[in-house]
Image (cartoon, rainbow, N blue to C red; front, top):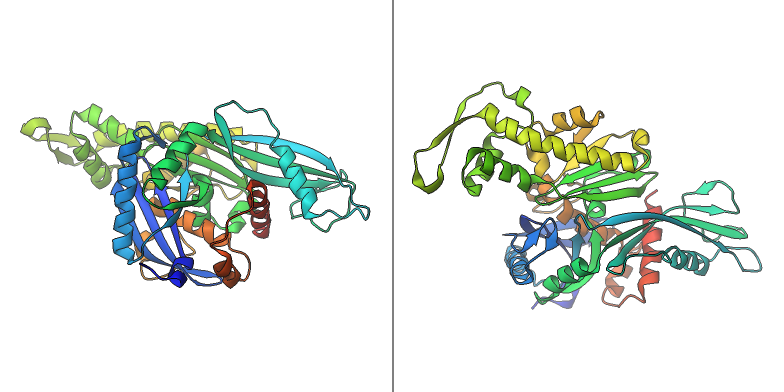
Length: 421
């Protein structure tokens, strides 16, 4: 059993993906640094396109990854922050106006809290729940837009524009149950694009405008940032798994063999295949090995990757700020590791594309997690760490206290968002 002090200083991120479960264990070193001290991985079962379809299998996969992380880190894990994504995630823009009733016309936290509560008063389908409220801007007395937390400012009227992130209740509850069935507490559910962005984007990129495309196993997440905050997010039901399945169908081979040759010989651009050598591929049922040209494999891969980037381009356009993305696009996730994905992305999207790897971390296992496949897991740890109150040791003293309601959680998130500006 770990000590009480050790427990308070440990942060654990749980990335429940369609193809893999990843656990990142970190220790708070000081007020501005965390060390990666353990990693746990397990093949994912019971999930499809980011959604739990078989709770028993999904829970068993999560449990294996958690136990692997415990063995790797020497820490007994009892609480985690988990990421959520999938095509059921929606981003709704809303706004509200309230009157400031204080005699001195000073805006207090209670006013912001009241405005936030009012932004949530929107009509939603009965099967949908609000996951997060992300403020975009404040407007006081119809003056200029304010991109800072407005407490202490003077005004008679406060307008808040926000993005409401929603998801299916059944999907949220299924994921929650799968995690808690593994004898761990669920500290927070974080939108995966937000988590990944903390790992692979810097504050300057978010301020000047950037789109992040996280190509996972079952889903691709698109997130668009401007002026330091998330402006738009969407999930696409196509990702790396679909590339593998295309190879299976196109070449008539086993999925394991398709995944292997994709990683070893796959190109996202046919035009970049300089040496069109023959690949020997295992056949089904022990028959004679197949011989396939690298260019044939590349054509299969490029077709699906083009579709993923085409759909991502549509979502970026839907953000209505596609022309304001001065930092271009950053791709991450396992799907971004395919050779020449960056170049294909630039061709399809018509803007600069860079590859994003986790950063802002340290410790003995930092090299092991410096890969796009760990972007969400590392981001979940960074998200938790950034939510620590300024003067990190205060957080260590308060960490085990329960939060006082959803509104206060949302209010704290607002402060964190604007502290980054």
